[in-house]
Length: 285
Image (cartoon, rainbow, N blue to C red):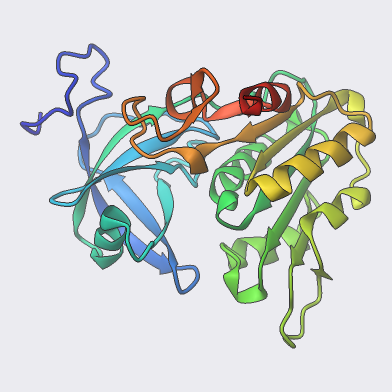
């Protein structure tokens, strides 16, 4: 392999050995967010499920966990979306890379959204801001396995129209008859905005779903997740059918740094996907 392991050598499944990936394309989503399309240099498959993440190494800078933004149901498509933080050593280094450069990938890691726990489920995907990548993966997967699911809803909230990720995808999903795509922005700032101005919570009422066979998947800021979970439960959904991807809490991705500890669990090693019932118990002191 590539000479250096990350502290846990001899692991039988090689998760701890980074695989080299070449950057094939870079798309500037917003002023601070980019999507990287990757191709692994070995011929081994990279089988992953929506909700899982990878540890991304930028050589010379370090490693960060990033949710996988694509679905393995589309072979040859492997994408990650990363926000550049001014003080983030690895994110700044990643954003300086160009097409043709190489990075390391370890994974897939973590658990996935339980998409097949409820046969024929209506899926309600709720994302806020940078929480959309992992739900984009879930929606791609559901569209590629359309017969396995009932109604598909995507609710996406961003602070402003130009802060949205995957605008082309959002436009396509909005036109599609396969999915009900509803968008909200905190403020439209005078832009001709055809969707809702307000909060993503305002969109839940527009979802005509069957609570007995629905599964909700969420990823976004805590200020969004709690209220949306409450509204879905008012519609009759169980707190065990509301899944939350907590990946934003992660830092090292391997349970070493303690950054993502919630109660007695680590988001990176026990998650990143938890039921809303679990999230509530984790948050209690």
